[in-house]
Image 1 (spheres, rainbow, N blue to C red):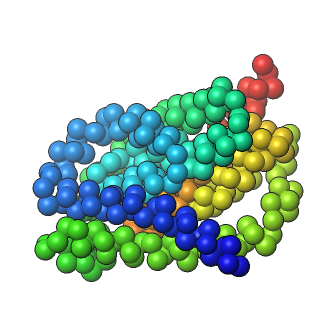
Image 2 (cartoon, rainbow, N blue to C red):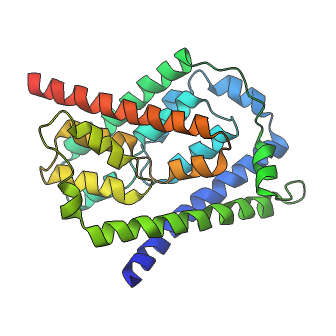
Image 3 (tube, rainbow, N blue to C red):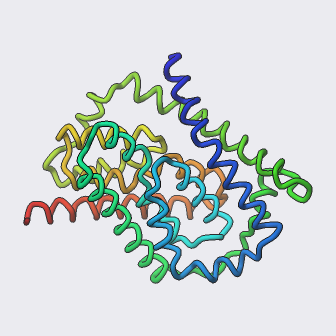
Length: 278
């Protein structure tokens, strides 16, 4: 139990600077920048930038993108591109295990390409009317005094989210510890069309441990490359938790969750089919 608590605290501490920096930028935008101009300038190429930046390891950028989407600084397509390309804990694990550079490059490149393609498609086909959600609404929802100190307001946002993430991460880490990876690996069906359905579902678990399990299962030959990609595409770490915590539109949150899941499943199945044909 002590190890679980320590691991949970370590995960939270790694996210702390990303959370604080994100809210600090948001506060600055609210006070100094015309957010409407930013949206107009970045909407067209946002998914491309999001797909590339999302490949940065760890959960932090996904959390940042989530908060930027909630305050409408970025588009839905950009958010999805970030979610799909986010590497989470995959890259550090592969580097630590000495996985060849080609395999690492192939996985990250595919995640980025898929993220950009679907991000651009979403922005093209799902253009929505501008909603009157401003950055200040996030402040009002958290009951902070944003008009006085940008730093104090950012700190309050960070603490509120951090407490929430600590609780959820502790519960999930306990499940991973006591159930064990062997039992979880039996859930995956290798060489079965349903494998990507399960991998994508596991990838949605809002914890960095999900990407760790999927990566290790793939490296051990337990799941196919397509199934691994399906899970890694949907694995955006704790970003989904932040979305449900901060975004008041539950239907929109569910739509985003199902959209990411569907893209992961479709991509995984297609990758396995192509691999069989080659």
